[in-house]
Image (cartoon, rainbow, N blue to C red; front, side):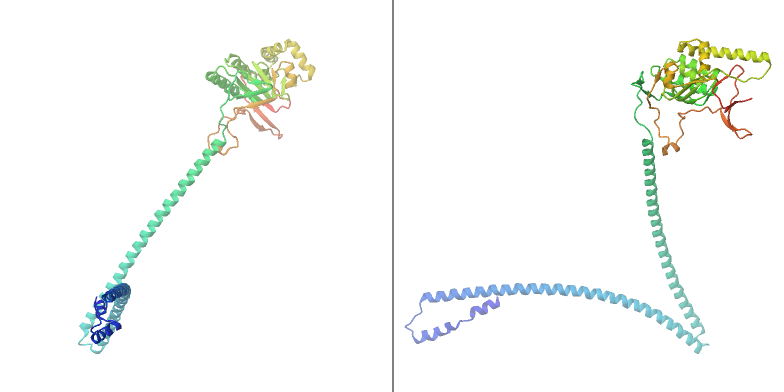
Length: 447
């Protein structure tokens, strides 16, 4: 505003020439229009100058604010540096104090030596004070060390807890992975498809065996008969419509009493009991096959019929009695087989020795069908009872199921003094006899 006022009082050069001219020529009067223009020009120039001053003032104000900010920043830096310097000064002061105290202690020692009589008590006092201060300083250091150790201990404890949590998490994850793997193994090692039951399992030369399956392998003993009859009864109680399968992989026969027990249980079963021969059925096993309600065999399976044979001790009368018992057993077991063949018992016996001098009449499955020893020849057998993988990892971690290929555990293998392996048969009851195919004497009765 002051600048504006000074500009308003200033006169242009041409204005100074007007007054003398007016005085010189009074008769000459400037036109009114020129004065107005001059006033307007001055006013405009003053306005421009005023705006210019305002602009300059705003610039100066911004510059002032910038300078103030720079000054404030510089002040803060100075204050920070001052604080750092003050901290350093305090550290130096403490260090100086410590040095001074050490010097004072040394000075006191020197004074003590120079003035031993007068300053003895004062020297001790100074030493005690110095020692107290030193002890206090050491105690403070130890306290700080204890506090630091406590912090480190807390930190280590926290780290251990975190590691424990992480370890527990890893263990839990590993356990879950193991459990998942076990479940996956259980799924992979089991057949999840449902077993399909049918009243007629034989179609187009293919036989489907369901899980109503009973294995018959090895020598037939009373324990074998007990297991088979128990399973026949169980399957009957479960269902009386669908067939039960006795599957013979390989059996040389065995006890006639045990075989007869199996036959009577088969006959009394409301559910049909079928016999399947896959490899070899001889003697009592062949009789069970032929007298079944329905029997099946592979074309190359072997079925062997022969007469009973037994070795007995005793006098002649005892031998005759024993022979009489064996003949009765032979009639009861072989006569139904001969009847199914459409011949008499004597003819059946005669033809046995026509085929072999030993009387061991064996035929392959397709020929056995022609003799009515088996009813059907199968080209393919579908086993639906195998629902667990026998080589699966899960099988080793769980209780083993009852084996499908059941052997009689009453028969044990031994080695005689000559180094020949043999199987010791269990002792028979006095009214029983072995109906067994044993050409090489591998099976030996218990004396």
